[in-house]
Length: 349
Image 1 (cartoon, rainbow, N blue to C red):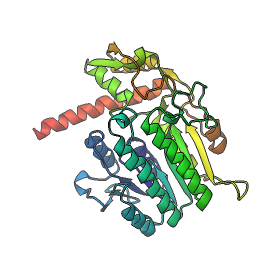
Image 2 (image 1 turned 135 degrees about the vertical axis):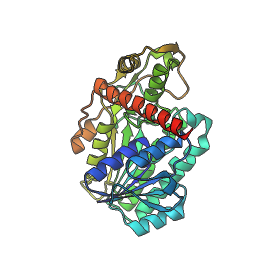
Image 3 (image 1 turned 90 degrees about the horizontal axis):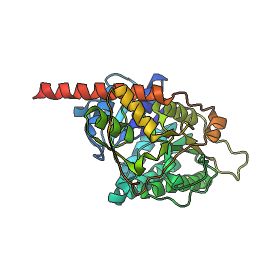
């Protein structure tokens, strides 16, 4: 298939692109490469799939030097006319929409970015899918939509009308917008509520990277809610497997009155205590953290736990990577990546 992957320079997008190429699909990667976190990591991800930083120019195609079936374009979701032109010219079979302004805490500091990217940007993708129809739009939602839901595990059947961060509110809005377009224009859409994704090439603002950096560099490690938290940590390979299975299985309503719309949790369905996760990093890093315990941060939740029965039933999704294996892979990658970057800096100096 010919597939558009937005957020292709991001953590999940990059891994999704790699897997699609391995399976023989034609892929166009799309990303604005914003500076929410260090763009060097984003360009290093792209370099892994043959996109050289010096060749990346706004709104221009770049051909991969290592994959004939991969091209990349640096473009912003808010560029509606350019996105419409892209869809009209390319005629994608499916779209995997992973681009968004991420981060719960950052949404408190910079709310404008979330409205522009997550609301306006998603609207532009929906409009493009409406006017230049695709077989399926798979898009990223988030476990953040559950807010302070006390019913465990979190189910897609639960009410999520009380988000506690603007980020969560924009993701819930995406689900509503997708349902509307599925209902009105019969666009097959599936939303995926991701649960704490981690692994090699992960975002530097996420807990695994922050924890590992603090531990290996003997820096203070800030642990919120005094460590009394649990997260449904999900390894990136399991996430990508789920995305690809969903992408090739668009919703098939049983009657014309039902919108071709689905919503799934995608997680490990096995919450891990935060302190156990930290202990696992310590073990693999060969160092002990300097722990500083702090109160809960605004917008955070104490526990996440995914009920994955809907995605398991729909596409046979089954996560396979336990925390011990996943953390080992992540810490090994993190240390090697940092060493490589230090060596490159020394060569430049």
